[in-house]
Length: 142
Image (tube, rainbow, N blue to C red; front, side, top):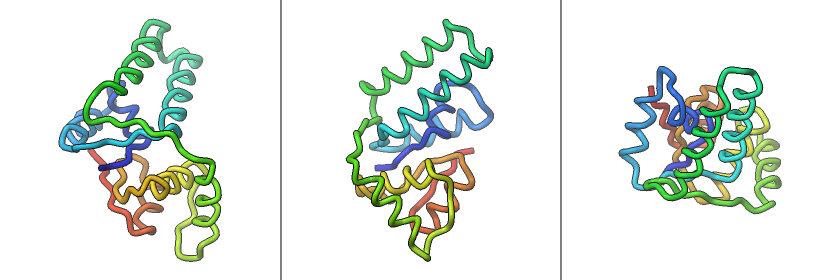
């Protein structure tokens, strides 16, 4: 099982230089966990792209439909998160052993801990560094 963040999930929805590599990496996994946090971040990015005029209304709806279809597509598994993820994020942040990172990145790492996951797929270098500082395995496709 691997946890995917929005930096990688978005590359599946629209074309970027790393999109093929992300799709291939996902295809090799038996389970790809999409947390409610990843889903929220992805929805926010989709809307931001639409509001900025970078995506037509039709493409925006197609991206949203594709994201929803992942719920019925292997190897994706969608998971809600308990409120305790915030306490875990604070505890991680206050630990002197961890690398400082942005709030949403810290929440993703706490979500992984809540879900019992040790592998992360991300295309975000800062998040990857913070995950490695926690001893997690990181896959950065592309």
